[in-house]
Amino acid sequence: MKSRSDELQVFVAVIQSGSISAAAEQFGQTPSAVSRTLSKLEAKLDTTLINRTTRRMDLTEEGRFFFEQAKDILARMDELEERLSLRHQTPAGRLRINAASPFMLHAIVPYVAEFRERYPDILLELNSDDLIIDLIEHSTDVAIRIGVLADSTLHARSLGCSPLNILASPAYLERYGVPETVEALSEHVLLGFTQTDTLNHWPLRHAEGDRLQIRPRMAASSGETLRQLALEGQGIVCLSHFMTHEDIRQGRLQVVLAEANSGYRQPIHAVYYRNSQLALRIQCFLDFIQDKLAAYAC
Image (cartoon, rainbow, N blue to C red; front, side, top):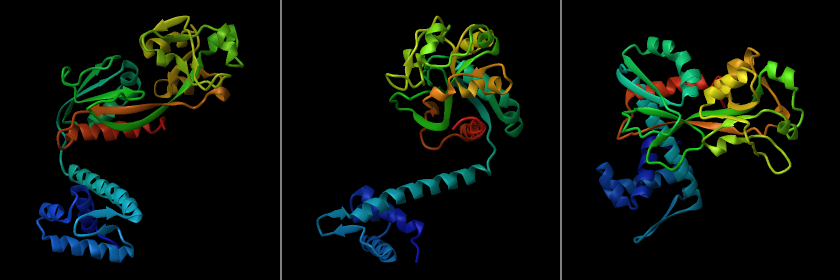
């Protein structure tokens, strides 16, 4: 006989609260009823989950494994129930979104018409900022962050990740030649960022590792500016796939040194404040944009 969700809830509550009596109070049951539920669960699983004495409880090895899995199952059930309930509601209200200009232009703006058609009562307010902002100070509901997140009190949801490619325009490559090795890059015009040194570490395997720190001959603070410079044939650039996939598909930019690419992918997260239940308008946007990113992210 299979275990039921209520038995999983009791088991997890006992472990998290530290005692049968505390879990019994939480569920409005008697300690003996909670103890019977645990015994029934162990009987169904044909294993001992908790070694219980009058003074203490200790999880067995099987109990520790089952506890972690049970927490995950219950969390997924809660999320499913929340999503089902949201389907019966109508998302509405102002939604303030902040993202760096490249992400806004290439991963949000192209889908605004479809989003507004699907959710006509959500009033979008789109703001671009290439620096990390304070969500409260800027009255922002959700911000999109590219790269590894710093420690934060904000809630974060992964939207996927995006490969980094080394790119140049056909005009540049025709004029200066295609670099055949990583070392050959030293003979080319490299386009990089002005502010964040980590963005000038390209995912290329070479003698000293799998990240190559470049010294740009021309630099800009915005990835969109670097994209435009590359399109104009001004040099070789390293940019995320989410902002260049159309350029690659249409031949405006070409991938170079693909065989030397170490395969690093930039994480993409949505960050937001959450008190109890995530606002429906935010949930709808995150689900929508994550689905769109899946087409060209990992």
